Amino acid sequence: MLKKSVIRYILLLLLVALATVAIKYYAWLMPSFDDKNQQIYRHYANSTNVEATFAKAFQVNDTLAVDATILRAKTPIGWDSLCRDFKISDLSQNEKQKIYEGVEVIGTRLIRAYFPTFVTDTLVYYENTVYTSYLKQVVTIYHTETEAQDVAIIDKAFEDLKNK
Image (cartoon, rainbow, N blue to C red):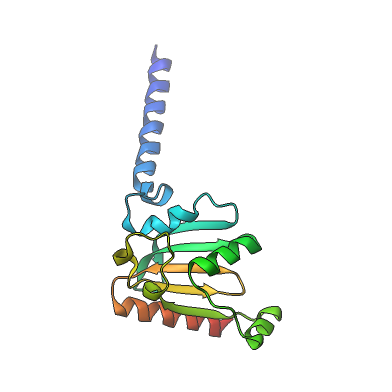
């Protein structure tokens, strides 16, 4: 009888510990699909050609964390789709040569003039910063709210490029 009580107590303790961990990390484990910034993520979430990630509170620097949608082309079709959807222009011959040599070419801009046609709530994305890595074929949308956040993200992008 005592052995059953001890086993039940241990199982209950284990269940409470698992529930505590699940509650603490729920936002990280299961991002909320009610989040206004996830429309682009949801569009690509089940794509076989584009890997989509939504990062809640993506750490940009020591003092800034913003939500970000990261889209990585897995195939040439995926990259063509991202270029078409985000109106990413073709590179110059010099830039293409840099890519061929393994040198990163990046592009940064505000999304306001480059909305994908599937975005219905443009006000949510109006001031968001888009960072494009041509070498890695990655489009990152930083869901910013202020101009200071935009500047910090662009500074970080160019600092990362300089350090490589």
